Length: 242
Image 1 (cartoon, rainbow, N blue to C red):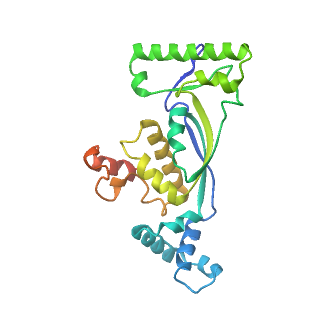
Image 2 (cartoon, one colour):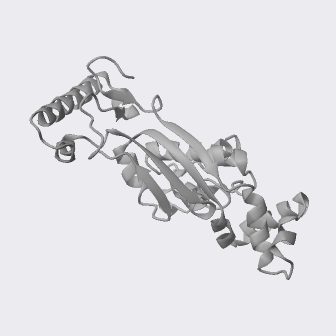
């Protein structure tokens, strides 16, 4: 929550995730690509496949793992209000394209927004100290800028909590991999919330491709082994109701 003299934002109040654009008719294209591997028909003929056969084919390729065909379709998201701690995790997914707001060219002299973890927000005393630390960082940043220090150097005092925004594009295969890792309850809470909202939005435009999207325990044993959260039934219900 923003207020005078404070730079913190409680998580969930500032995060914005929006599916900006995607490959037109993604399921039609994926199905046509899959059929092309085993058919002498022309590409145009393959694109005319009826919806019932298309659904059957998509279910089959997802079940057998013929996922290279999903690489033909992509989805672009606008993401705002996440922390730099979250974006550092996000860009570790290398099979994607990112355009992120620069702390070198965009000055935060007026005020930098910051994400407050729920665990800190729930403790009034520690939350006050956290907010005071953010305020001190802001003051030092401003002093550096006033002294003529370039923004690319002044940014060294900005915390991992600092908000950022970016545009990200992933193909459908990489999205499924991303969801399997980041929707898991063992994922860090912020990127998990981001992944869950991304999954909800892509399911609206491509429900068959992303019907299997989510943590690895949705369709089999938990891949975390002894590190499992132990709540598989609860997780499956959560994503069935997404």
